[in-house]
Length: 443
Ligand code: ADP
Ligand code: MG
Image (cartoon, rainbow, N blue to C red; front, top):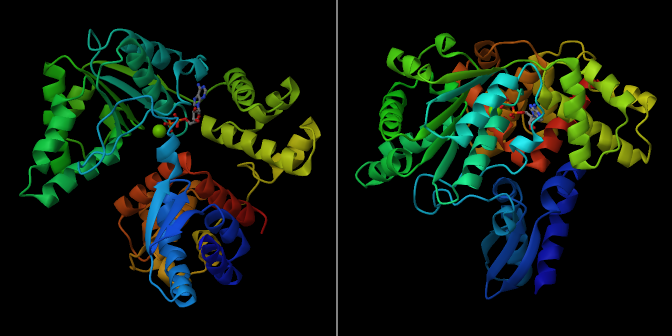
């Protein structure tokens, strides 16, 4: 029976681009097929959704004809089965508005390289983790993109959990807080709001919220967060927030929240100096088992300056290229390889070029990419295009919005954040984005 699945998949393969086939289609595994039910295994939830939207209907149709029978489909999600990255007993998923937010096992204190530009934030985070809510509450970690805010936030969570395994540590992105809150309002009637409040105000011993700038201009959520903050603060529960701006620079934020953000300690992270960049590279290389000489590390660190995430990205691509080409990572090899994707290399790209490339990659119409349609087949490529426009051009969020048929800047911001977030967890999406980027840079 199970062979039928393979046959149906092969029947649609000729219609799928090879890159998409390898990325999205091949990793889906058929576990069983009986009594009209198919069990499939997907690497993660995101992959499952993509597969359902793009391939599943045609495959099911083919199967129906082949077997003269209709099938239902159940998914197993690999990530959620093995779940190595779940050290924490966080909020339960299932039928509640808050999915579990797991601490990322990569982001611990021992993997964080300390240098002059993050020393204070690191020390503050450690202090708070060692003695939660005793003195500095909230801890407000502030710094630009890709400089280690999220890493420190998770590190605080890991460390508190290590010292207090029975504590409830709740770590969420601010975006998640907002969506949960809106979800609770929308559903109304039910007791979802009670559940929401219990989860955020009563249950946590520690509340860690990433990217709090996302609260800007969201009045009713700000109001809710204000009360969440007060409830926890009064109960002597530690709160840690990260933000890409200082409280004083946050626009669209209620004054009473702004002042609360400054009650505790503000730890700033700024761009690492050359030595720290070298140290970070060497540490990452060691963790990932990439052979990296001092010379190459120094060369890379001198070329990639803007932020740690890019530095890490450069290392990963270099390692990938070396393993594909079967070559040693020498200085010369690094120079050749990095030239292709160093930030300084590309002339500034136009949003139009990005849109064309993305539309081509996903095989959708340019007009749809810029248009109002909301179904996933166009909304996902659109988010990717917005993300790339933000990364590869110097345009502001409102400018990018206007190039996508006059969308609001908040739409662009949430698209960019969503892609950023999913990319962290999803190798397939990272690879899609890098492929498109590389194409853009080579045209
Ligand atoms: P932010 O939240 O500030 O945008 P992240 O915490 O996501 O940045 O950091 C981006 C990447 O850089 C992560 O993979 C993180 O582990 C790494 N990173 C940042 N700073 C450091 C550091 N000091 N030591 C080791 N890795 C770091
Ligand atoms: Mg972050």
